[in-house]
Amino acid sequence: MFSLLLLAGCKDEPEHDFRVSGDASFMFGPDEWSNWMDFSAPKNSHPEVSVEMAVNPNEKWLSAFCDYKFESWRVNVRVQDNPNRFKRWGFVTITLGKSSRKIYVEQGANETAVFETERQILRNTAGEFTVRFKTAGKPSAVVRMTDPWNTSSLGYERWISTGGIKEVGANTYEATVSYKANDGFGRIAQFVVDTKNSRSGLTIIQLPKVFEESETVVTDYWGGSLPMMFGYVSGAMWDYDMDNISRIRHLTIKGGINCVDLDVLRMLTKSERRPISLDLGESWFVASNHPQDPYESFGYKDPKPEFGIIVTDDGIPSQLFQTCMGLDSIVLPSRTVEIKSDAFRNTYLLHSIDIPASVRAIGDWAFSGSRITAINIDKSSQLETLGDYVFHTRDKIVLESLYLPSTVENVTANTFTLMKVKRLYLDMKEPPAWNLKKAVIDTLFLPDASLIDAYRAAPGWGDIPEIRAWPEGWKETPWHTEE
Image (cartoon, rainbow, N blue to C red):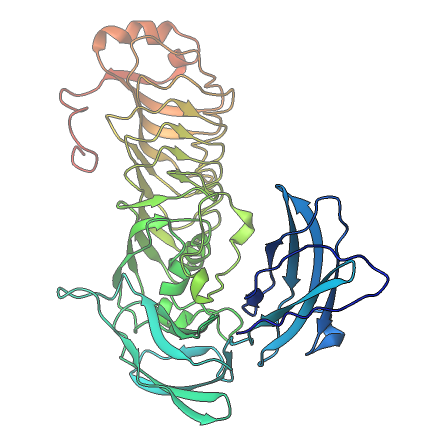
């Protein structure tokens, strides 16, 4: 850390009065950076600047120029990234007439740790491994982790740790990392090496436990954690351990779900040979414009969202479970506001679904081609909008019952096309002008017997074989209990 000031004489040039601080020097870290320094010189003078690189001159890592700003001359100095594991230095010379000043410039060595140990994929048993790395700095190391799923009543579980670093060669170090057996879902950590000027990390992933038939997972608030929890490892021979995942028959998810997680949901439900029920009642869908991967800073790469499905806040995404033959039953998030188009189209094992009161819209073909026989719309529902062919099930599949609240205002010419239902409960005092030409309804139930004549006289509604008042207390009786 020093500066060198030289006065060079020039016989043919006049003497100019300009001053640079006596202790002037530039000290940079290893990254690309720039800095400036004021010096005194007449405003109408024309100082010149040159650079001299004492180390690595061929890399042209040092540059400088002078300009006049804010009533003062300044010299601006820039250095490029230093990829070397040694410091480098040079000089910036300001010349004005026969006077010159030489200013020392030093750039620190690249101290970034380079790992000789590859990313670690750990089985769910306990063990240890050695991390080996090189750095020109003086390193310290810690293991950082995030583990919201494997906690105990005593709080945060520290499942991985490291001892001290030992130097085993020139700029070469080793450390031992120990880890516990994993009796929960997949988890991630990072071995972090700090030096004075840099920080770098080695990704460590531990695969999940052997799953049981019934599992409950708590995800990150913004979603994106399901791939990690189920053991997804990009670039490995196995992306998922399907033999392990196939053990699950009932899965409860609590927390956020985003577009990254959809890959897991479709993987879990795609095969009719592995039927599974999902309870999403305490989960929520998070829009795609929010951060998607909570472990990016750990060096984790999640799977690409399947089909490019776009997620909106609190909406069941379009095509989410389309052709998912293994979805046996599902509890929707309690705060769902929309079921988008094709969401449950062509499901095979799904026979019943409860629609929360919060749902305002159901999109085109949402249940089309499915084997659903019970679409239980909450009896306090505020449903407003129905798209095309919403209730068109597979051939010969007939809905046992369907309730439509008085709030339904927006339907299309094809909303009820190819719908087949035994009992339709309609909470409307006046017959709506809906197209029922290609709908089959065995019995229509109304809130009051006084409405029957008006419906018998209304186009489409009068063709229904039987119209009745629904039983007393029916609307106050929850689904699954009245019949």
